[in-house]
Structures are given as structure tokens and as C-alpha cells.
Length: 369
Ligand SMILES: Cc1ncc(COP(=O)(O)O)c(C=O)c1O
Image (tube, rainbow, N blue to C red; front, side, top):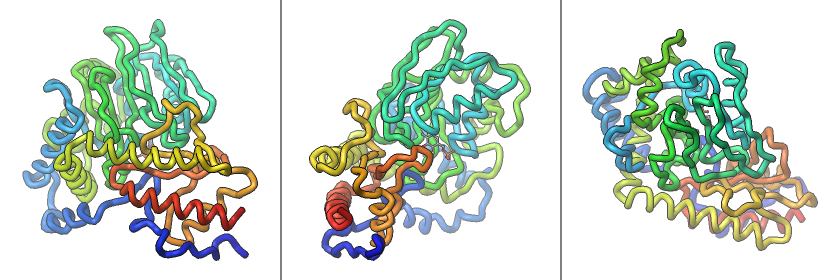
């Protein structure tokens, strides 16, 4: 029997089959927000109605992340990937240090290494499925961490490293919104909103300390206009972006922030992520044919559970069977090349749907075995 002909009994199915690690599930209430603001689609982002929404988003991020008064929320088009190139012009003075524990952290390190105007970066690389940690190093002016490596499901507690003159940047694309992080542990905590914030990609938000703002303002070298964070800073202070943003993305972010904040803020969102991820890891640990990919419990992700499948079963068949039954995007990160599945446990994903998914996994693995 071809694996994709296995029919999962209806009573086992989750109410929503979207478990992708980004783009991730968009809640119906977020779509309702778009409908309620439909008259603003096709209007200028330089006029008050949209600028007010951007200002509200900036304020709500400040509340959600408990930012000190002097921190600023920057936004610019291009996603977290753009921030890496922007950093190479507008943040890193000469030498950066990168903790690499997966695809995304490795891409940022490669950009710094290639930049002809920068010195050779320090790169501290971990074995897949584990984290590496940075130490204060002479000559390093920018330390680069990743809160949650979406590719491997390795998550760390952000920590401060360096001295008075260096800065710490944390890529929080998939981690942001899943757990409280002390703002004193970073100078920039930046993320694309297509994960915990259930929005579309294409934009990046960056929570910046005064030290990071001074660093951006102090760098005096050529930067392509779109990568010039001085321009980003000027526009963000006017609740705008340099070029045209996708208004629907802003609407989706605003709706998600309302949902999280109205229900209790970060604690609410953290409880949902922790519940869902714990269910998956407990299941994986207790099933003889599965195991959590990240062995160190302290480095296991709250938002992207990576689970090894025994070699007697092809994980691709599991993923294909799930997809055939309307449960999508449980694929592992393609370049990791492991026999595993990856399930997102962002706040929008209902922990009850994770319970159902586990029943489906038991059923599918049983059928394939
Ligand atoms: C940890 C992390 N950093 C950076 C990125 C890149 O984000 P974007 O594709 O929005 O540029 C991703 C995308 O999934 C990610 O998971």
C-alpha cells in the first residue's frame, strides 16, 4: 500500500492541520481583523490610519516584551535575513562573533565572513542538535546569538556577553513571543513575524537598546539605502518603513498582539507553547520508535519540536501520510538531512490539536511499521 493512501480516522484528526514552522498557522480572528480594516487596504502607509497601527504595534511590542522606556522598536522590510546584511553595514564595526547551531545562524555567520569591509569573524559552531555559546573575545564588537534555531529545534536562554563597547544581537525569529526574555540580555532582539505572531513574512521588527541605537548612529561608512539602519531608525521613529510595507502583514501582527495581550501577555503564550512542546517531547521519549532530536532538555525548543524517527520507518512517509490527511508541514528542515519530523508549537497552535496530532502520529507510525 502506498503510504499516502493510509486514511487517519476522523476522530483522531486535529481541528486545524497547520503545524508548519513558518509561515505558521494564522488564526481566523486575524483574518477577521483584516476584513474589519478592509477599507484601509489600498491606502497610503504614510497617512495617519496606517501610521497609527504601526505606532500601536510598536507600543504593544514594548508591553509584551517589558521593554525599558529607552528601548526602541525598529521595523524594516526584508525579514530577518535582511537584518544580517544590514548588520554587516550598520552594526558590526569590524569583527563579529557568531554562535552557530543550525542553518539560520550559519547564514548570518557566512554573511559576516564574506563582507569585504569586515574583519574575519569568530565562529563557534555546535554539533547539530546542540547549542554553542560565545565568550567575551578581544577585538569582537558584535556578538550574534539565535534564541531558537528553527532548523534544529535548539533553543537557548539569551545571555549577555562582551563589554561596555560591544553589542549583542539576538535572532529571535522563531523564539520571540514564546517566553519572556530579560531586555538586559540583548541590545537587539529581532524577528520576522511569521512564527509566534502568525503573520506573513517580508518584514523584520527589532527591539533595540540605547546602546544599539548609539552603535547604529555612530557607524560612518557607505551602506546601500535599504540596508542603512540609520534610515530605518528615522523611519521607525515616524511609524513608517523606508519602502512600502505589506499592510496585511501589519494587520495580522496587530491582531495577534491583541490576542496575546488580552489573554495575559507572555505568560499566556508561554503556557501554550510549553504545554504543546512538552506533550510532544514526552510522547517522543516514551515511544520506542521516536526520540527528541535535542538530547539536552535545557536546549529543547518551546516552539519547534524536532523528533527522530527510527530508521525502520521513513520519516518522509510519515510526513506524506499526514499531508494526505490534511496535516501539513511536519517536514524536518530540508538541509539537516535527518530521518525526523518537526512540529511547530507556536502560541496559535492549540495544545489540544497537538494531543490529536500525537494520536495521528501513533496511528500512522503503527500503520507504517
Ligand atoms: C531563526 C531564523 N532566523 C532567520 C530566519 C529568516 O527569516 P526570513 O525568511 O523572514 O528572512 C528564519 C526563517 O525561518 C528563522 O527561523
